[in-house]
Image 1: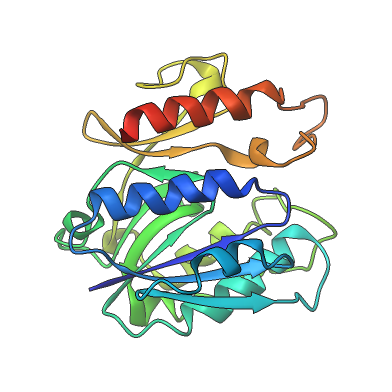
Image 2: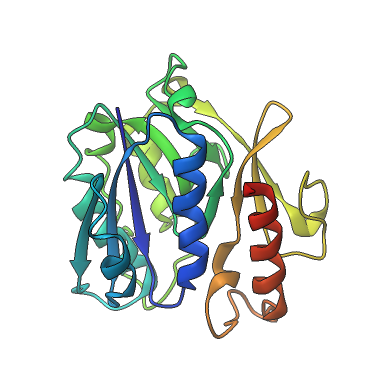
Length: 236
């Protein structure tokens, strides 16, 4: 059995998370357990708290800064998992694959490498007891989102899992071309297993204000509507 852990941010549009939930329920059979943490707002908790297989957690982060709040929340909810396997899925992902099929690989973790020892944390699935050994807090508390490799939360994965224990998935940044579903006009990511896209990730472009996630870059607000429309078409 799998438990899906997801942290919902204040600045993520709730309708994107609705697609996250819909996609997992549609593709993963039997349906997994869910632990949902809402960092600040209770909108999502109110919507999902009455589902039989959902546990909701309100969290008021003790430290400011997106990476700090994210790490604190992940530590909290991953520690609550009692099933053999745990999936971490960010609240702006659409999952197009049965998660149960991923745990059949003879590995302790299925994850997306950024570099040799650094991993994306928007989607991964692994053995719960080992994931509960990971500290998802940045090594040094940051004022906002931490993108420095030495401080990235994804570096903590390599502290617990050896490379031989990890089955790597392929990451495609659609902005550079090569996406199976979204072209280079979209700020979106795809995660590929073999030749099949199994995860769509809208990324920080899902925030309400279209804030810059790096110098000189802002996500066009219209793309939230277009991305959501495309994802809904796939899930029909």
